[in-house]
Image (cartoon, rainbow over all chains, first blue to last red; front, side, top):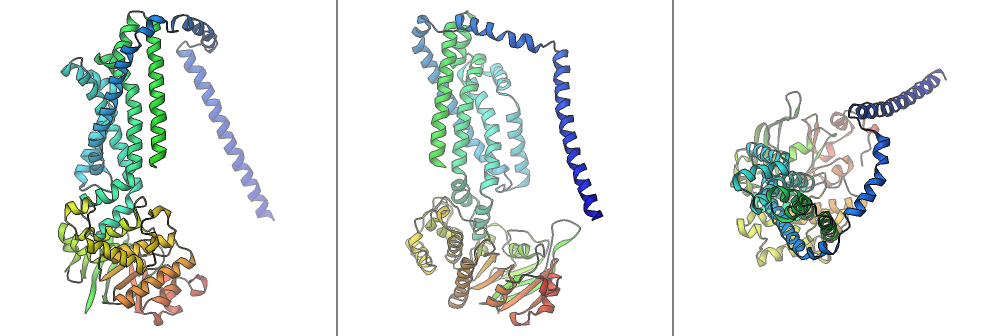
Amino acid sequence: MTSSSTNARAANLFLRRNKLYLSLFIGGMILLTAVTSRMTDFNFRDGIGAVPKVIVWSLHNFVPDAKALERLPKMLDKMADTVFMSIMSSVTAALFAFLFALTGSVTTRPNGFFAVLARGIALINRNIPVVAWAMIFLLTFGQSSFTGFLALFFTSFGLLTRFFMETIDEASVSTVEALRAVGASFPQIVARAVIPTTLPQLVSWILYMIEVNIRSATLVGLLTGSGIGFIFDLYYKSLQYKSASLLVILIMVVVLSIEVISNTLRRKIL
Amino acid sequence: MALLEVTGLTKYYNKDAPALKDVTFSVKKGEFVAVIGPSGSGKTTLIRCINRLIEATEGKIKYSKAGDMLALRGRELRQARTGLGMIFQHYNLVSRLSVLENVLHGRLGYKGPLAGIFGIYTEEEKAKAVEVLTLLGLEDFMYRRCDQLSGGQKQRVGIARALVQDPRMILCDEPISSLDPGSAKVIMDYLRKVQREMGITIFINLHQVDVARKYAGRILGFNKGKLVFDGPAEELKNKQIKEIYGTEADDLILN
């Protein structure tokens, strides 16, 4: 009897302590928000109060007019450039990423040294933001679409290598083991086990990368003077907000439709 | 003549405790050998050291005509593995490929690099695959994708893949641990058939002591990486079971 009542008391104490930690955590978050907003002179009430004004101003300046619509064909032309560039950079990056992922993943790596090397190269590539890549290549190749391509290529390559490595390690451990036991060689194992088991996920990552790259291409184009980013910059700096806003709408439509297309494709292949 | 000769096999994963300690035994052609022991006793390590999926720290493994398995490199090792089948607890099939393609994977070790990469098999190889599938009662499932099969069917595909290798021995790593009792019996019966009718040696890890006693001619018992029992199935009594599992037989579920 005594032991069960001490146990009940211990359980009670345990639950109460967990509740205390939760309240302390929430209290801490509120305090942190208050302190940081004080330090940065950010006022919630003023911030929220400004929202209606922003909406009214936007409605005045950002609704596309007839002149903007006249420019639509040119915009579509540049948009196509941007989309093709994103697809090209994603697919080329995927090719290299797959080779690096094979070298770096725990399941398939042929040699420890090269695995570390491959992982290291991919790590550096993906941790340099796409904008920084664009700046670096601007110095060497100047303002051209090739610069934009390279910037997108290197970040996509770094990211895809990591995604592919995880996919290979997650999906193909058991089949790689089986084919090693059968006496298959490394290229045979890759072709008959790794690729068939991971293909749907690999394709899904490439589609995702194309989506991301269309978004980044806009930003990269701003810097490298190519594609949709370039004309957005042009309209914006010459105060033609109505054309710029049409462009933003166009980008949203394209990104959304790419997302829809890739989601459908993904569902089909999985 | 011995088909498999293991001498002084030792494996350390870390410095403290060996997974296998100085294991010595040999297996004759056509035997049905079961390996039993509690989890962590080294059964899986042993079976994977034989075909070098895991590298042993020390010792010698002589298999068939291959010589010392531990000394083989690259091509020679792949050639030795070709004559040694293996089936797994989780079947290890490429689930998005068809049954037929998975069975033909068993031929990869015999193929040239390009024919293997592109999956080009000869007429004889295909006929052999169909013959083996028919033997295992899978002729109606040949074109089915492997992810549509039940566990027992998948394991039969695993056996078929091992059989098209023309192996002299099949290593089985807990092949029935993920199966329901009915499918487990079907698989054990097929393994016995393979051993009796085709003369292929079966070397099998089991958790079920009674299954081992019923099917195996000879039993190896492991405890903490040491071989503590090696004898015919009839000699495995409660005393030996206690030595292997460290518990009275009455406290174990044996089947």
